[in-house]
Image (cartoon, rainbow, N blue to C red; front, side):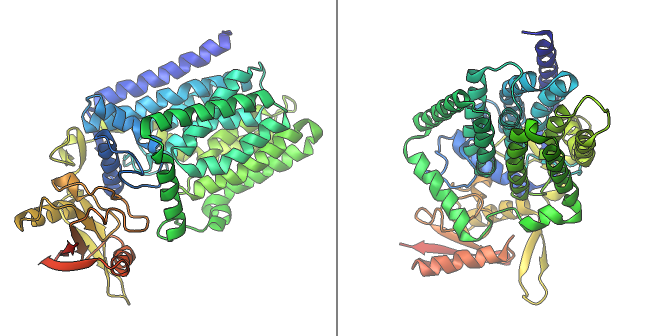
Length: 503
């Protein structure tokens, strides 16, 4: 290997060593916010670690590989908190080789070093993005997907300094397959750009190897999960796309993510880059067309992410600065690249610094999330009591805090009534009572996204009087009625009504 390749490799190893050291010193996972998302994550990890097949034995529109690293470490003997913490490091290590390969063949100097370091740092962060300092693994799969996507997009956008079709093809094929099996949004958004970028440069061998590598990943998934996994996965994707419950984590419409003041700077950087590339003439034609396809895919992926952070600006900055002409020193590419870095700098710094925060958090303010699982802790104050609000006009109560307290109290109430050993379908957004001592609902969905998942195995239906999402509660009850499910009331208190399913 050339000296520069060794230098980039050394930086990557240093990043991974630091992440591992910080994880080892943290003593588990301490999260500060988004406990509902953490319960969703824990449910899916424990189900998979227990041998459940995603989409077959339980339902989620998030791909299986978004949870497999955590579950594999849990099966290997780590505690739940350790598996979640070290799973971050594992994924950072897994994405590092692709980042090294792409960076050393398409970038030079500090750009290659920065790109190769950025990818594992994104994967190993303890925040989803934004600028809030409270750590959590909420929406971790979005960060992972960005980290996975960076290498194939770089290979598609820029020609290689040292052509190596097999290596490029393996990185592209494996990465794109992983995206499809982690969060399908990224595959849909970026596959056209990757295909077009390689085709425009007539890199047919790279495309062929990519196809073979992607199919190899699919074969391995089939061997591990079974043939039925694929139809079940497609079924979950169809369900969320057609149910209208939550087809996107929407804070804004797609058009708003393009033009709202918070996001328009990123859009202008993208458009300005394309304008500059167009002015360069035929020498940049392939790059222009590829990046023209990457931009809408990146915006769509950001729209599908909670918070809508334009993480793609990190990738964009490295590519645009790599395209800059050496003279004059100030030009459109330099302006666009620096602007991209400035816009995303607060989010990027927040992600980079987040693994340090577990070491400085006051541990006395935390308590175990679950009585049955070790080394996963949340803020005690957020676990103590439920808080809700009443919507003016509708009179409906909506839970806005204290989900953990709610689940604990539900399980205690059911056990006191002699109903603790019966699987429960919760008529609400979250259905994870079993984590606190109940019984898992076979075929259920920890996060509701449509249909009646788990109704065949449910013996009880719990209807909260102050649900997290009143519309979801009403929708589930309507679907139960439409399906002819007969419910017999067996328990009622100020928190919920519980019905027994009559078969």
